[in-house]
Length: 397
Image 1 (tube, rainbow, N blue to C red):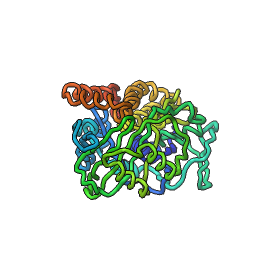
Image 2 (tube, rainbow, N blue to C red):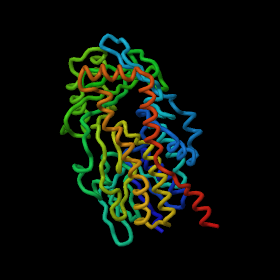
Image 3 (cartoon, rainbow, N blue to C red):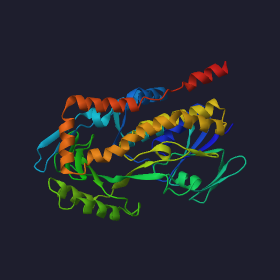
Image 4 (cartoon, rainbow, N blue to C red):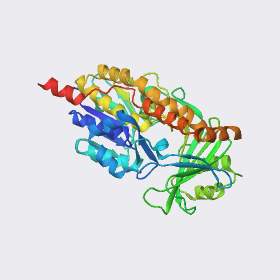
């Protein structure tokens, strides 16, 4: 049985997979480049019966309900602050919305008893042998594992090492997104307030726990840019250039951007990977089928972790059988969820003034808004989930 599994990434997919592998009798190790779990972060959501069923089977649903945000309504305004469109909390928050940092903490706590966590390190090389995979780490250590799983996001390090360069596997969708924390000097309340100019969205919302703090969320249209993903000052200049000269509260928000130490900046992209496994290496979550925003990536990651661990258990560790079943069961579901990512940038930041007016007018009509909410629910519930625990119980009898 391939029981010794190395997982790269300790955000969502990695700890979720470790949780299920531990319950099935495997020995997971999670390595994470960051020195510790990242607190706070933007809100993430779960939608529909499939997402909630997995959380319930994990035993997490009551705890997550206790710490949920209650959703984040969004109000679009013009340059004078007059409301042009109100969207309810369910539009962005789904059935359950929590802060990403809170979700990572809960997943870590539930998986830690059966998982070795290694923070402040990363994989620098992978060598497959006849019986496993030799992993070399940045710290200088080398260890042997039966299997390796990349759960390390859209720009996956494991995918690059095992599958090759990302140029043909990550597709730019025409927009960039930036978020950062700032004092709530604007006095915004619950939810988000956003202002559009053609191809751009500037928005701000109060912190869910500390109303004296807020978060900014900017989106802008641009062809693929060449920039250093580890240089926040260069990224700040890209955002500043894209929004320079706009009205509303944009100048004050840009001033806070220049001072922030915690900018998150990335392209709005999606992973298109021909196959999710190669030999003894497999991908899960955003590394396999992620999208920056609008692709229901958090819910998909939790579902994928459940299925991958379950198929490994059902196949008694036979990775060839398990990886093939996992991908066959989930690929269509994941791609259906990903489809929303291609539309989200255009929805948040329409390319023209006429497009902004059209979006605001159409979504002010309740039937159309309800229809969009139902589409999201349907996309998240199009996969049948086996009950792997029941299967294991029957096999043991």
